[in-house]
Image (tube, rainbow, N blue to C red; front, side, top):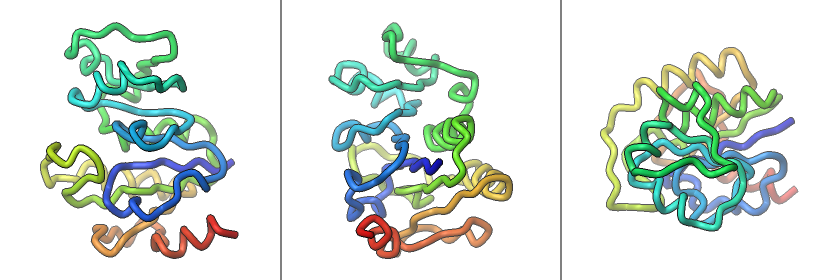
Length: 171
């Protein structure tokens, strides 16, 4: 079973998300432009917009982030252990693995500063933990990154270009 994990890096901008087949797991504010099958959210600043949105699919969240915003979980909100100490990308990858994915495609994980949405939101440039986790998991699971021209190179992780991925979606 193929699972696509959708991050918020600029490389996913040209990808027609509605053409993706199989299960989709989105991160943080993806719900503002696309409705994935699942969302993983850890960022405080994005918790309330998702909470008050009409997104109704399962949400996997970091407990301290939700509590930090003074919110109580909804009936479709879950806080498993893998959400407590990871970024949303790491958590989404863990969710894909737990769902027994045979192929995991990663979109919008550029590992460089910059986001598609919430451009006022800035994150530090340190992606070392994410990259180490990704390298480790790619050695154990069938993972590939879809990369753009400004994506950070991670030679240990199989990748294809955004253009190649779009061609696959068009088949």
